[in-house]
Image 1 (cartoon, rainbow, N blue to C red):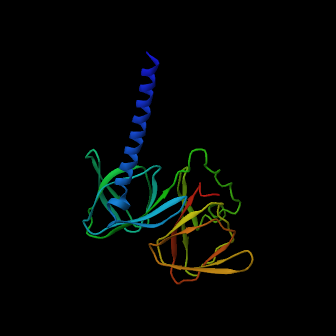
Image 2 (cartoon, rainbow, N blue to C red):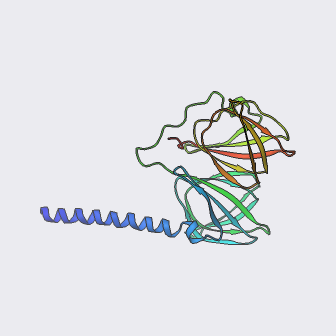
Length: 246
C-alpha cells in the first residue's frame, strides 16, 4: 500500500476516534440528570473527590431518560422506594428499598417512575475517578478505627474499591470512646436529627446540629469523642471516599 494512502487512512482513524469521543461527551452532558431533570435532581455539593446529589419524586412522579456515569454511586434512601426503572433498550425492573437502606448502583441509562402514593427521596454519592496515573494510595489502616474498637456503634454495611459505608447509631445522651477515622474525606448523611458534641484531644469541643435527610462533607480529622446531647437516638451513614486524600 502506498505511503500516502497509509497516511490518509491513519488520519481518518484519528479523526474518527476524536469524533467518537466528542459524541460520547455530548451524550453524557445531554443525559446528565442535573441538566435534563433539574426538577427532580439537585446538587448538594461537589468537590474534586465526589459529587453529592439529592433525587426526589412526588407520588407517582416520573423522571425522563438520564445517565449515571462510572464508576457508580452509593445511594442512601431517606424514604422508602418502589420505582420502576426502564433502560434504554426498553427493559424494566421494579426496585424496592426501606428508609435508611443503602445500595451501590453501577453506571446506567434509564428513566424512573415512582409507584408509591408517597414522596420518594434519596441521596446519591458518586465518587470521582482520579486522572490516569494520579490515583493516591488508599489510607493506611487506623488502629483507632471505630469499626474495630467500637463495633456496637459503628458497622460497615458496604465496601468496594471506591467507598466504605458505615452505619452509626448513638443512643440519647450516650457518650462514645475516643476514636479516629481513616485519613480520608467522607460524606455524612443524617437519617435522624443530629445534636452532637465532639471532644478533641486538646480538650476543646465543637457541636453539630442538623436535620434528618441532610448531608455534609467531613474532611480528615484527628481523634475525637462523640456525644449525643439530644433526647433521641442519632443514626447516620458515613461514606468514606477511599481516594479522597491529598
